[in-house]
Image (tube, rainbow, N blue to C red):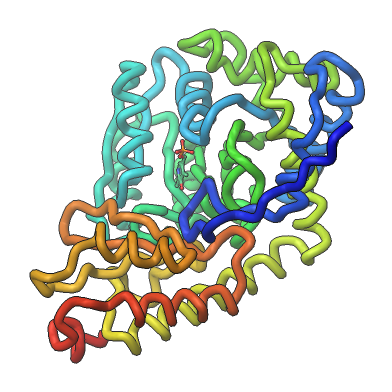
Length: 379
Ligand SMILES: *Cc1c(COP(=O)(O)O)cnc(C)c1O
């Protein structure tokens, strides 16, 4: 048998997922698995168990894995948890909150959108009023870290308010889970959703949902789609001890097992949060010294990703900036907000402070537009 050598990545992904993974995570994909065999099902069970432990210290919780990108898991929760006579309130301050509202619209679920704009957190007194006047609202959905801007939403305060009014709380913790301290208890989440290729630093292929056994059992028969039926998927995994209803992303799951091992070796959420936060602070400090400005006020920043205002010089072009950084070994992310032109730089994945310092040198060497157009702008 010939020995294949695992290539190095040609550039670092400074994106919010897929992101740069370790070589050992990628190497874990170098064999095939039978989706119905116990060897593989045992891996699935260990992953499900670890995810629950990451989300809560309490008993009574369970998790379910769902094929597809993170959006598929969000859609499976929205489509499976909300009953036919239910009504959803979505807190929106970016593209991912908006996506939840769009999912609900496709599924013809009556929905109220609480839009706080792209640079402000949800308005809690307004949320309270909305829940107070509309008793038909059964579920509230919010995004923990809004990856559009990097905004860290006050998930605990939102959760507390939702519970004051006795509604079900759905949290899209996609880009924060494993990278920012979070628990089912403190957030009051009934459903927590994330995916393999974000802060746990696995490869794409599936997402996961955490809830109590009782909550999961309560949604039987509500799903609006067969392949997205969260209850059915969970039932199959529970009864079959790690079996999936349909073809499962075996290689992604095996890589995720390895990613979870490395996550624990690094020191869990606390260590990862510290590394990401250090990355983000180094990044913001360095970018500011090069004349760039952040979109959000500092108090709203998350350690996951940062949105920077595009330089105003007519000679600036994202495409040229992007290509220049890519040639130097870094891939950044285009902006997604609608109000102003931005670009984004992520800090998650197999990325450390040295990488960020090398990036900052690459940025400095890539600035080929009029220097005075960005200098002096330092907020
Ligand atoms: C990444 C992400 C998603 C899911 O996006 P996919 O492209 O479907 O993986 C959902 N919500 C948030 C906040 C995200 O960052």
